[in-house]
Length: 408
Image 1 (cartoon, rainbow, N blue to C red):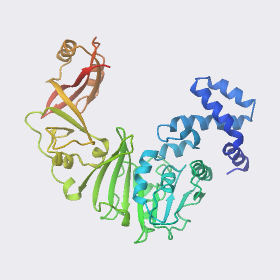
Image 2 (image 1 turned 90 degrees about the horizontal axis):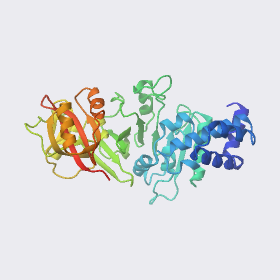
Image 3 (image 1 turned 90 degrees about the vertical axis):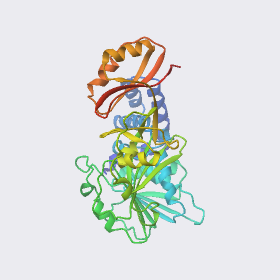
Image 4 (image 1 turned 120 degrees about the vertical axis):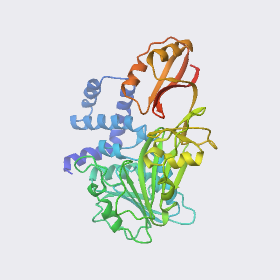
């Protein structure tokens, strides 16, 4: 890093910049014009440092969706995009409990590193947690973020996967760079490549590789590995390849949803279970439609989950399920069917008007995207709200009016 650039960022990490960061965040919160903010900052510091402060505050505002203490942490644009959220990182860190030494390779600004450093330690007196990143600025920010959270026993340093010795660590977490040139989901083009990572793993070491949800299986992955897809809210955020002693469900796929209270809900299936043929659609729809969580979709576990819950897909190629489930499942979102009708805009408009449904959410699977726009364009007065699902059942196009209720 250029010495002048380093000095500017060291200043940002110092107490000298704290007041400017706080004031700038308040200015953005109260919607002060960006040009005015920049002008005021340049009265107190250099143009370069003013720009750095503005960039950092904007990143912190974006980071609030991922980090509970975002307004105290430090980010780069690229590392924020790839960083694991506090919620998911805390869930993953539970598998590392009581491991005496953990390395977080390609740690970025420390999303996973902070959670790993705070892991539970009951049977081990002292724990070692080390993060490395090839980018000097990113490593500086990760180290400072550890300090912000009071995790002084952990550290982050600049180093590379190729040069850093992993031999002494009981477990390794790694988030390979998937944007070396262009964004990719192919493991051979990651930096480091998936095959290179597996080669460096000792037999008694545990390994967690974080990759994109759409990353396909790689030939280097041991057959006894567990592949887990993890998400929060209604998104699948990442895929984790677990190998070694840390693996909880060898040879399985797992879909995991972590809610806002940090509760985790799982569905796991063996290779035999998720390779079974798809259940046949029923002749008639049940009282409700069930939408699998995106982690279930990404993991390819819709059919296995349907079997376990005694549900069926509504169509041969559509991943909505129907029937009466054996139990409640947090990985399924329920839509009670109040009206089942042919997908016809005129008939749908008449039905919505009769039921005084003025607020609608439209979902679709198996029909043209234009259908959503056409339904959303319907102007209806009414105090009720509902979700309309445009889809197919055994080849027939349907409009399902679901979850009708009074708008609050």
